[in-house]
Amino acid sequence: MRKSKYIFMAAVLAAAMQVLPSCKDEFLEKPAFGALSDQVLANRAGVDALLIGAYAALDGQGNGAAIAGGGQWEAAPTNWIYGSVAGADAHKGSSGSDQPAINSIQNFTLDPSNGFLNSKWRAMYEGVSRSNSVLNLLAQATDISEADKTSISAQARFLRGHFYFELKKMFNMVPWVDETTTDFNQPNTEDIWPKIEADFKFAMDNLPATQAQVGRVNKWAAAAYLGKTYLYEKKYQDAKPVFDQVISSGVTSNNLKYGLVDKFKDNFDAATENNKESVFAIQMVANDGTNTIANGNQGEMLNYPYNSPFRCCGFYQPTIDLVNSYRTTAVGLPFSITNYNANPVKHDQGLQSSDPFTPETGNLDPRLDWTAGRRGVPFLDWGNHPGQAWIREQISAGPYSSKKHIYYQATASTLSDQSSWAPGSAINVVLIRFADVLLMAAEVEAQLGNLTQAQDYVNMVRARAALPVNVVYKYADETKPMGGYSNAPAANYSVAPYPAGTFTGLGKEGALSAIYFERKLELAMEGHRFFDLVRWGIAEPVLNAYFAYEGKITGDVKEGRFTKGKNEYYPIPQRQINLQSVNGVSSLKQNPGYTQ
Image (cartoon, rainbow, N blue to C red):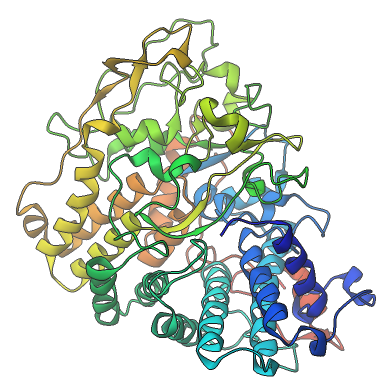
């Protein structure tokens, strides 16, 4: 479902219809001029417009940071700040003084006054509000069949489930507001997991398997999200049959049987999007005629190499710890799941681009070079990454550049958007892809003691990585990268599935560790890592080990410290606590460890 001017109008319509008092700000206290009444909107056209507006809220740009005077990246749907930077996949990047609010997030020194948290909260509750508006108006419409009402309701409830899932995994205890709520000063004392379950279950049971528009959610995306919800709750017995169905019978909204695409990189290229691996994605578009990049990955606009063909801005740099994780043995297995930093991948930290440098010659997983840009290796089709020349401040964030959201030079004229001071692109934000489903299912199987099945799922992911099409090749002519590639690999790539019986030999805990590590390799820089570490209960040792190692190399994380019992969740934004206060008493309770 490509976004269009119609969607922009729907988004404004939804915002005018209803804004949650729980996420209001000063400008919302003024009357909304030009708002349309329920009577005008309570029909098929009005409900459809509001539903499209709810889909439009998925990108986090509608009523979040931009209106609050912040940056569009503060509520980016990729969660690059809250999931990857906080999860040790990436440094903030740029320089130490740029966007300092992210420094406190990556080091866990943040407090409730951090404005980024308020932006994310507002953006997610805006999505809740728009979803609730659909459900409210749907009940009043008289020109929609019961079957269509059910489908529309299922889409709206899926979207609401997504927005609440985001809020739950970030803030834990948050207020539940639905289409029946009249008093919006709700407390955050109820665990909302059961209600999120109910929304995804309703969507799974009532959505069709395919949709006329690929961006609309189908039953199988809802099922995958339901399985993910059960997994977060540690309801493994409930999650297993759901994932079994998704894996055996699931299809995309455009009716492609779920599977892994042969080319890993095709998951991160607008030219090959909405493929069989895309379970649910936010549809992005470039050059939409608005002269903005609002619908073109605006949340990622900072995250391109500095002083490069992309112009801006040097944020979101993969960590040395992450890159070291891709070291493999001669037979293609991980060098070490726990001690990979003992044999680091060679890097150019501290070197100028004019200084001599030879890239790593040891065994590496090829997914590394589709995930992190490193010196001397092709940066897609833009030429070899030059190292320090594309890094704003190495001492702050290391020598690497992010890669999964970068558009190709060959298609830049149509699939990138240069309408703003930083680039946009048409690359979809894939919230759940089939590799993620397989690894979640593997985790469930291991938790239930089915170690052979768990290994089979992991090996499907590793076997794809091992396909020859995933090798990164050197340029045929280093001076003319667009002229094509040679038949010489850019590194000594070696990756392979685990031999039969490996997980059984490792036992349950060892198998789970292997699955956790596979998620790190496969899903790096996709916004999952922090939330995975928290739900696995290993955030404290993993992140503090990262701070101890990486802090000796880069200056930005040397003061980092994760505190167990506190930093598993972000603080409730102080702005929201203040807004929901009556006579000095707020209906919102602050998370443990943060001063209210």
